[in-house]
Image 1: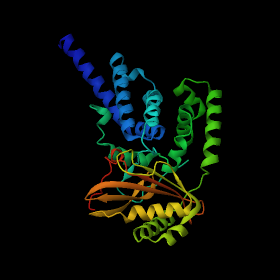
Image 2: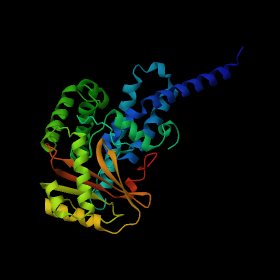
Image 3: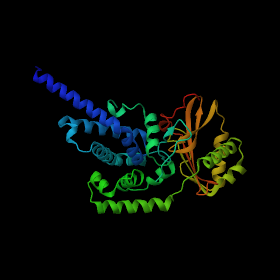
Image 4: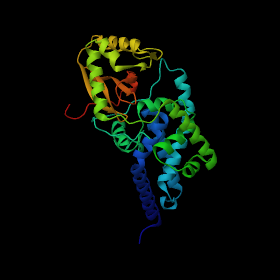
Length: 331
């Protein structure tokens, strides 16, 4: 006959094991939802750690069997932790040096498809790069769309991500955000109209994306300003994020001539051990530049709806945002 204390200890261990397994099973989903709300891998990992602590504390008070829908419960915790952290993130960006861009999710391969529509289990699913790979196999949005999402209010962005990207119904989102369904519908309408006015929906063909990207890189490395101007749309804009760590333009650059000369000048800077790789960044084929074996920068190009020209260039060279960029096996 087992001692009562032994049985209680075994029951607690089983509950902890179950809680861990449920969290890990849903971690990829939580990572993708929160990342699309925040645009930062580091902030996303912090939110997942807070989510795990909240989940473990809840399960410690009552068994997971008492929670009817663990997935919905975890998403609700994660989304609300993300919303709570957005005020602090906004304050940090107010003092950020230069332009702020979302932290790129760089995966090893070049064929990842995109659907555009601390301690403990919060880090148990390998590192952030692996989480990025898995997030992109579920749902994520492009760098260009993430930039547009930055102009939404936190609640509008949460509703847009949950409804447009992950397909949650308005009634489900109402439960997650503790809002009425009618309020959620209004938020969804405002967010959708705002995004569509700045980012019409279209899907770039992978082959076209690769052709334009490779041609762009060849022209930049060759200092061919004329070809760059052919590739760039007349109203092209370029954003660069050095975070005060690396010299970059303090404001967006507009117009094909200015952008062409900026890109050619950037590519002409002498560098040792320069290596250029094509990687999937937030689901789009993009350029990852390595210098001396270490990641130096990520360049993402947004194409016009017809795919013939580049309408936007996003350059992330802040080392703090490149710590999870790595080469693929076999490179």
